[in-house]
Image (tube, rainbow, N blue to C red):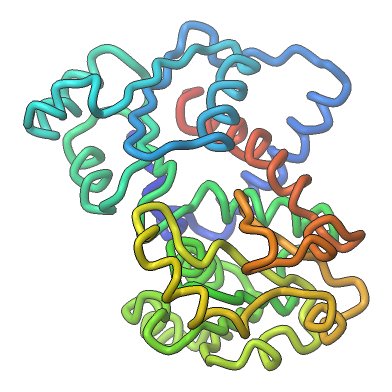
Length: 303
């Protein structure tokens, strides 16, 4: 039976840990220039509604390294732009390719694609979830701490798709998640309620100092995501006290790492000194998109 990755909740704990373990193996093999091509003859379609550097390049490079190929499709270049039903596109692509990555706005779009496709559908980012990024972040945490459990993870800033995906990760793994967001910019209330109903250690406040106190991992993201550019001036005012800077970093544990999924707006959500400093793991985090997604592609497309 085909599997999809629409949110992290599509995976159980064992599957998440297996992906991380396999990504570490693939990363080491990549460093040693080992050839590993289980996806020869396989093709991945990539439907992108939003611009991308890391998602596009890491998926394309990953498929190439695994022996497969990719087809990049901007929605404007497809019949979706002429109102072809998504279900029809899903059925047709299923006859041509072996998997599809979608980077779009509405989560409902990829859910509908998954319902009608007979091939795996991967969420390359929507407005509400970004599972590939947070799985890659977990890989980075595993590398730095040797575990992804029994840690305090802080999220500062917008209650966006990344914050939601961190909540879904906390629903599957045993770490404490402290989210600090301005009022009116909180993450998905339904996911928070689900976490609380299951007794997970997920806490939301508008106090960034409480969130980072003794944290091992500090996350942040841009204050205005793609499509929210007109809100940027107002958001800069609302989010100013949530900046990750040197003074705030000093409240975390000495071994704490900083994660940012990039691109960063330096001087807004994070300072140059922190992003370029010794506790920043942002560049390893970016690289790990490649290795985690290779593990994901091998699992979903390899059988």
